[in-house]
Length: 396
Image 1 (spheres, rainbow, N blue to C red):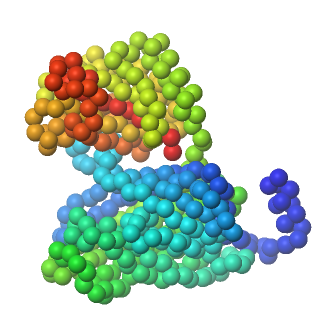
Image 2: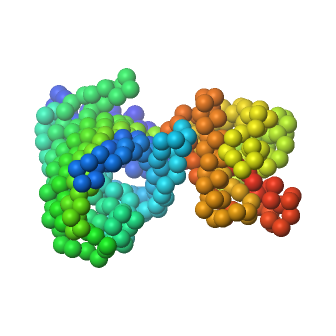
Image 3: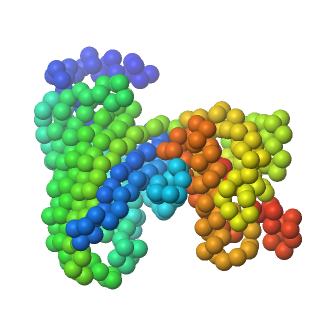
């Protein structure tokens, strides 16, 4: 049906050589995820503070589409690869968001949402664009400054984005129509409630976006950015770095069928103290009483064989990301339980990555301490069950 439509349109409208029509094609029920990796240097009062390697994972589902406007439901997950804390990305924050977007890219979203950060980018004029043609549109960034500055509401930074259709560019060996997006920020905002607030904001962003015309959305982008915050306290914080993102369409997972297959594999492989369940995120394999050296995150040799069997199962779902979560029994302090659970999840993650069962960018690590017990903590048997690591094969 799509091929016929394209043929008819090409017979009616002949585009100039090198011209392109950019527009979002949004279908009810479609799912995709965005994986972006950010390398960022942070400076405090003009002195280098630290380097961050950040993974942003966004799972999006398109709902009702009406008159070209599509409702999007999205979960934004941020994680960071911290030095000395394993090869996987440590879970940091999770946000949910609901927004509408029309075929030109303009968004309608409640101001209470923190995500997405950059809004109304990219947007397109409702006309054909020739190579080299330019256009501009207003956009804004929304930042979560609750922890940094005690600013409780999403913080808005406006800008004007300028676009250039740069023609065909290569991304991972394929050719795509591409455009640049650049904006500069010079903003002196009014004070807002918080412990401190930005007095002056300066910044820049320069992107190349690779557009998939058949899918009707970006397939990837590359960015160089810099932002400087001059604060009411007199301090200056600067972020500078680069980002790269890729948009991946998600195949629908038959969770019931996958759970049955994994359950059979657990039995066939002789995995003791292991079970599988369906949950909101996907399919979770629970490894109860996984063995570490006492009060440590060092895996016993016997457990590595168990994880190799888990790797055999994961290989059947190689295209899907995983969440590795650690859990403890109710012993010691809350801070100690949290740290130990995260370290043990990282140890399992490192082993799976080291054996090439997953790439680092496919693994998020999270510790829950004793927050999610599966058995009472007043018996040794119950505590043994609660000392577990879970691996969730994510649906999107």
